[in-house]
Image (cartoon, rainbow over all chains, first blue to last red; front, top):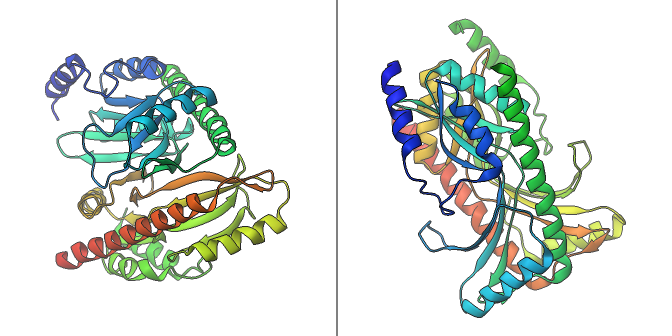
Length: 194
Length: 194
């Protein structure tokens, strides 16, 4: 892609209104996005610092499925309260708990730029990173591996006990912290480069 | 990479002894591997048709962590028996349950070959597919998205009840079947090409 067109697209994308579910920037990954966008050859198109969601379990994605979303550490008391609230509201649905790792989509000007970013990300612990699109531009997806996923509500009834939930809170928080460390590490690797 | 070197590597890799945990070919993905390897521009380096594992939860990968591994549909009775066996054997460890989607690693001769395979895989439902290595050769990782992951044993004690476990068996089997359909679909797309 000619240099000017990439630059123009970058300006267009970065000036767009945030369309994410949260409607605001995910602060823990903001500095990394800024760092990536400071390179002429890159621009970020989506980002997440790692998240925990309670989501209605459906075959196909559709709007309105997200019941709760957390980008910060969770507490047993807090999630228990949120689950009670969901149980009061939802009578027949199935709900799943999902902890997802930090994730970034980055458009890259050239093949070499894409490869370099993937290599750095892997060194920083973002082990599931690769080039996912090679049409008008190169798009790199960077992902880490911290995950949890299981059904939590079935037919409006809670499937798990407090002991299990306490362990889930502990493991989720540990995984979120790991993601945040990997975000800082990648930021550092890119800063060293400049 | 010159044509002859790629061909030589392909022969070397495909003649090697299987080093997987199972020690034998995963039959549900065997035809797809054969199909991929029938193209001069590709060879498979690892494959899994989707699996369920009970694994000791450790920070770092090491040998001996896998307690049970299933590549076929599971039953409540069967997994319950296996869990009892683990509880009898393991007194202090933490164990996690993991359902992982179908996965393939394919070495590709050229960039265009890699891109074409990723595009086909995505159309066949292997949504997490991309080029993960671009050093001596192009390596493509094809992954689907069906997952479950949660702690099941903590300090040698079972964390979940039968109702939860029945739901896990149901969802795991559904996800495995989805993976098998995607394997067939990708095989068909590659067959149409020939």
